[in-house]
Length: 485
Image (cartoon, rainbow, N blue to C red):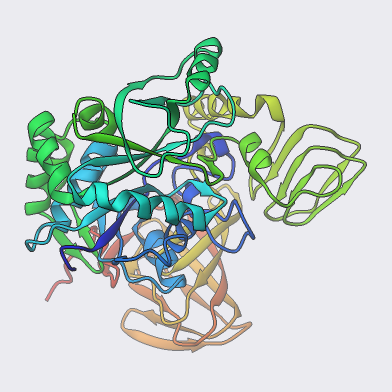
């Protein structure tokens, strides 16, 4: 990493509950393909739109440790080798995340520029975005803390605003910041737009690593102290850096805007007009979509629309038919169907709160659960039994494990699997099966070049996922029990 490098810092936290039932805690919106052609996730698009920037270096990604394998896999899919994937043991807002990234970027004496980005934004005009970033480089090199203010398209009351020291019309370089303003009422927002000095607060930044660290040391020293301790006592975990839990837990939870940008005299704002959206609701996805049919509908997945207008219809699995409907959001997932008027889509967050209060599993997780080796789907269950579909990626394997309370039958329906059972191995092809008795040490591996798919039938007195004793695990999961000599 050269001192003049431009290092993307992609913040991957957040659960995006307003895009439930697709976005959930175990698989939030930034890891879904929600915009554009539908081929790349929001995280992948965040990285891909940087291609063509001068001085661009490998990214630093900051994510929750629960999502580490999702992040690594999505970067692998687009051919990106991150400089590091930093794992937060719990969310502590953006100031600690930026601090950790800045400390990591300067750990070997370098002092690059950091381009701080959220992983869940949509930007329609990537070329204009790159041009705007380039326009901020000189100011950031000179020690200014640059933020990108979104040129308002309406007097929105759902965003914070940034006031510049002068009219921003035609501004080609960052302008000093006068103040940050929390979400205003509509009349105030209209007054803001009339002045030409206000932009929406995007939460994207550009600054030299040493410059932001100096202001953090001055304005939020407790954040720097906790983050430095968490990073000094981190542990390497495969391709990840796992921050020390106790030290990071002691870090204040505060946004970088509050900790630094609202107090510093080095802040500057650069207007960005590139079709930005924070994808805050299903209605926002409908509004920003470029692919609508002649009736104003956005259709995703296996959908049929007839005599329907201005709807967002999305299917992840089953056929969804919209017949004679208007202004609705319909989202089908493996276990939930959401039907909402577009004007009420923001209220989905309250529904998630109700489900959480009831302890409903649908509030946090999908039926399909992703693991570093692949995924599993809970198909059906009854008293003392359940059926799952397991998919194992080529070259991957589950941990060597055993269960105290359940036995399992495995039936291979696609590919070839190697089954290790109490020290003995067998090769299973399609339509072959094996039985794993309660207490047997076992492991499933895929030696082939295509995914292995199998049906698992579990039976026993307790079928929870915490009934797993791991003896060996190639993915560094922390609950491995030492194998007796």
